[in-house]
Image (tube, rainbow, N blue to C red; front, side, top):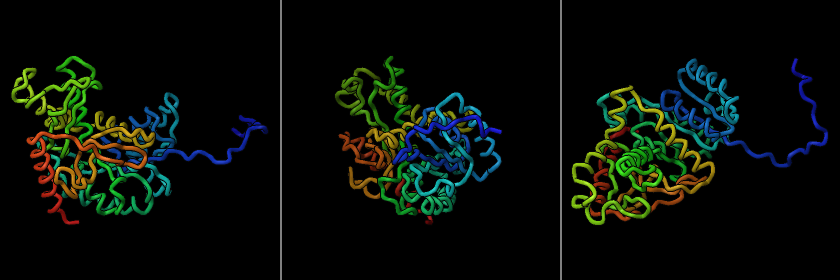
Length: 332
């Protein structure tokens, strides 16, 4: 009945080399996976997006719901399926599948359970998307990023975790509120583990090039020790507080994932605190954790050699040791 709706233009040129569509896969359609999907769609990141989940009816319903919103945004071909449907040319595979963090539970306690799940998933990733960049979102993200790196055999540049991108955003948001400025004007980092051993880099935190503290933060006239500690504790405990109230986190991590995806697809060479393999910086070897990192279409391009105070170096080494201890106990 629709055959005669359109009349072809005989003078329309036939493209010689069609533009390859931007293609993504999200494995895991829970709260985090769907927050990622929604954010990616409304910011026009992909031309094609596949959502995969063991709960087939659920993911079909989610896709139907999203499709009904397509008239309001730039169109994306979205479907419920599996990673096999992506073909060999997927750009990014986003891994959000995993056991959810429960109230009072730390991220590292999820390691063994989610490691088992990842072992099943990653074989399909290697088979069907051998050239994709892997973006790990599931927790504990640093451990699972290292597992993905080991089991896929992909170059370390193509295996990335969301790391402390969200922690850094929380840090900047709280500092901005304290100072009465836009969070995008605050330059400050959380590095190390995305978890309890994460490290606030107070020594380089600044607004418009003006550092918060010119010496050690303990004697800084602009903030008392209690104020500084309180800000960092709010950052470190943010997920616990949100999970206690609503059962899960979703919106902010969805936006963080979108920021990373845009940096990759648009080759922005953004500096983001993603989790990736550390090759000797600060005496840390062969563990995935977060440092300020340049991200482009190749994935991890290079890592910033951030000048840290002695205390920050010590805290970062402790964070690496915490992660190394957990990883070494896993049966892979």
